[in-house]
Length: 236
Image 1 (cartoon, rainbow, N blue to C red):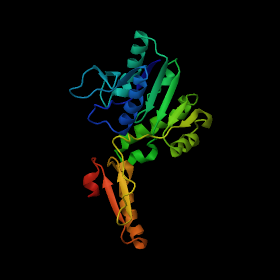
Image 2: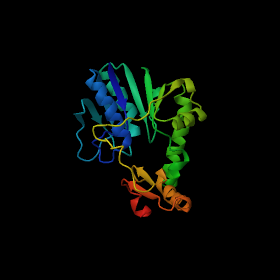
Image 3: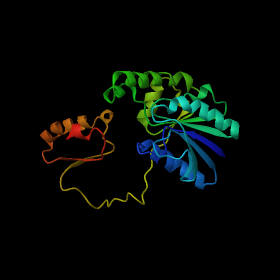
Image 4: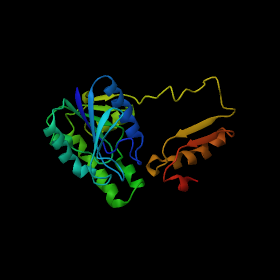
């Protein structure tokens, strides 16, 4: 198959995160199965306009802040240049609304909607832009099959109007060659661990506050936070 994928960033982008790791892990494997994958994404300072990453042909245009305006033209350009069998629309940040201008089969990948939590992360104007952009998704993507990463995301988009029959939960995987814990080891005291990026919208502050309540019943409990991000100074 010849697959066109559209996502905000590729994994070489300095601002890439979990969505990009997820995308490259999946589609890098698809390439190794013999399929062709082209990834259209935003550019960044010092980036090549075109290069091969993990076997995928990566085409960059626009920037992190403008890519959603470049995306429709970029997709149309690629569809004129060659024939694709399917388009994979990785929905995060501002949706691309591909059902409006793409006629070949579309599959959407969704980790989560920001919904109102975006107001915890950024200012009123950009937060409202993201929030209102997400509200249109159920209307435009109603007939598109979704691959979501959790039951909670499935329930969320059902509540917003996406038919359950169009949703399949595919949980995130893990590379056991890199992450191979010794299950015979056990913490000396009860241990709660957070592993992830430290962003305001991830609400790690609530976990920290909750530990005060937990300690009333489990005095020796410990909290381990592993990760970094722009919200770290606030949490310290």
